[in-house]
Image (cartoon, rainbow, N blue to C red):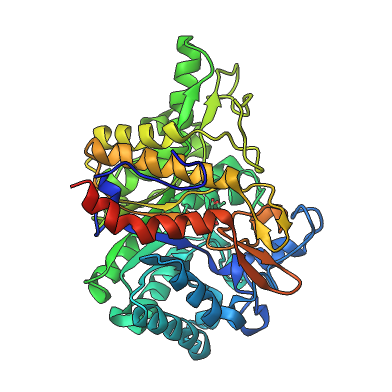
Length: 453
Ligand code: FCB
């Protein structure tokens, strides 16, 4: 192995020509141009002192609204097959529900350019930037928000037409619900176990309602949802720790996966006190279980749990080295094992790895970022995906998070996940060594696929 390359074994399923490699971003994290859209919950959250580690916000970010053509050219120069990005709901709809034409036009021209270059567009409808006016009416605690999301999904599917290869309704509803409404470290910053579950239920309902719209108005697109999973490992072999890890797994992972695939919540629901269980209306679970064309999986790390005297599990356990700059354990086999275990437990639709990547301490030296650590992370995780594919999991694509450094939520601009370095003052983009290695792998995969035959 050449440790400056991302390599796959000859004949690897991931080298087949129809396997898609892409890069991913999200609207709030890159766009800037906040004055040409409505405020969202992240604007409000950022304005609260102490919520974002560096006190920053998304008002400028990567100024992608200004630099979008250059950014798409950059993506094209890397030779990727697909680009995953999100639409900013507050940019494309006014508070009265009427379309914001200027906002819609932005995405239509972006899609046209992508299509012109032969890059498949993976559009996420909701990557956390709920319009603030909806939060003012209760946000995801208000069932009506799910219906507003359905209207938004309809508008987008009708406007974008056949420009879109794939839609995702939601990105990581776990983060919106748990981080945003249960422990309050993400916008809108609420702290209530009951609210976390209720928000999760309304998000899932929104997903199901939007799936119906997509099936009707974008029938040729691949329509699905993006869920994030951190597989749960027990700290010791003691039965109570194993039980704790299983509880956490149901609480964080299967809480989202089981409803969308099987129309029911995990059994752990019965272990929750009555007041923490969500209000579920008749018919909701059928809506939520609308058939998926694909499942998007985001993976970064694993978690370790142990038993607790009063709670269902206790997390925050000591991690094994090495860690990324987020403090997340680098554990590629977790991704392979997760794919294999879900493949066994569920009738999975085709899978895309919609996010995977690492924040590292990048140094820009003489115009270069030699991020060998990120490159090694990508190499090991892409190979973990390949192993799962070899063992029969139907995986159709892989997206690196992220195309470029951007606003990393509660961490602000302190954490860099990009394959491309962004100098936020000059807004210059510089492809890092990892980005070059990714591009190199893509460029040479045809030849190595054939060599392996
Ligand atoms: C995921 C988010 C994405 C990015 C990465 C690091 O949870 O979907 O926006 O912040 O984490």
